[in-house]
Amino acid sequence: MDAEEIRRSAALEDRHWWYAERRALVRRLVGPLPPGRAVDVGCGPGGNTAVLRQLGWWVTGLEYSPVAASIARARGLPVVRGDATALPFADESFDLVMSTDMWEHVEDHEAVARETARVLRPGGRALIAVPCSMRLWSGHDVALGHVRRYEKPELAALMQRAGLEVHDVRSWNVLLRPVARARRRHNTGDSEMEHVAPALNLALRAVVKTEQVLPVHRLPGISIVALASRPRR
Image 1 (cartoon, helix red, strand yellow):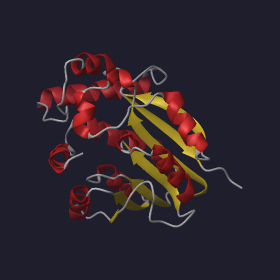
Image 2 (image 1 turned 90 degrees about the vertical axis):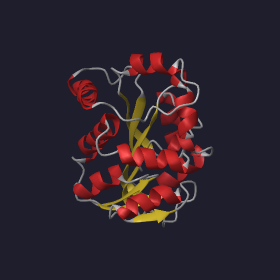
Image 3 (image 1 turned 45 degrees about the vertical axis):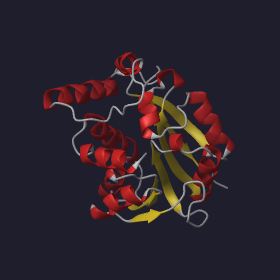
């Protein structure tokens, strides 16, 4: 993502339905885990990093972009500049590695997966979220600097090759997939991360929340969320 897109996303992060519901997803998935030491790899402006801190984790953000790292630090978050393909941390340093919408930006995602496994302690957890399906590829992905979108088997196999044990691979943002597909059919180069009118913003949040009580997580969505761990010795 270029600097202008990062600043625009950071300005939207507090209220925009997509960011708000992604934070809620992190809370639901990480909340049951006993807090420990965590790293948010590709933390961006730090919205999800802050969620981990609120949940009691001792958390560090890792960010490649100097603009995003600067914004996260200005929010009072501890951030290290670095490359996800060569994490500047010792082996077995963390109880949780989280990456939300970062792997799709990196050409060598095999290295990112290996590094995720390397810095996890045995029994440590990984929470990975990525965009789903090349069928949704559009100018939105180009504007955000994506290299790819993923299918569930592809993501699971990638993590398993890195030595992680995959426990669950689920869809997220399923109900809005038809809307996204219709919209992106004509998108040739614009990011969809833009201001949304308050009433529509609330309605979109409500749609995403509804997925919590519907059996839709195995259907195709806009995003994929994977939960894994490093096997114990």
